[in-house]
Image (cartoon, rainbow, N blue to C red):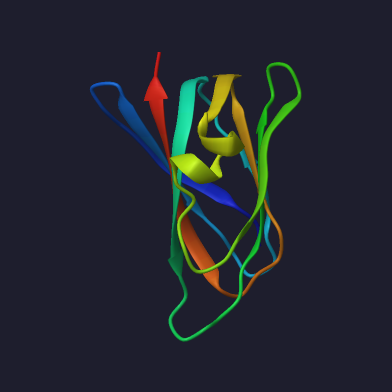
Length: 113
C-alpha cells in the first residue's frame, strides 16, 4: 500500500490536503497546483502504536524539497517548517512518508496566494 491524497479543501485563503498513509509508506502527488505557504502538518496516529516516520514535501514544478522532517507524536507547526518561515510551493506537491506503523492520516495546511 502507499500514500493516498484523499481530499483537498478550501476556506477562503486557508487550504488543506488530506493524506492517508499505510504502514509501508510511499508517495503521492497532488493533481492540482498547490500555490501558497505551507504552514502546518497535522498528524493522526493509529491507536496504541508509538513511533513515527520521515515526511518529505517536494514542489514538483521545480523539483525543490520544501521539508524533510521526522514526524512523531505531534504536529509540525509554523515554527517547525523551514525555521518558522514556512515553505512556499508553486505547483503540484509530492508527499513522501517513510514506513511507519503509527501515522495513519495527515492534513497539510497552506495559505493560498
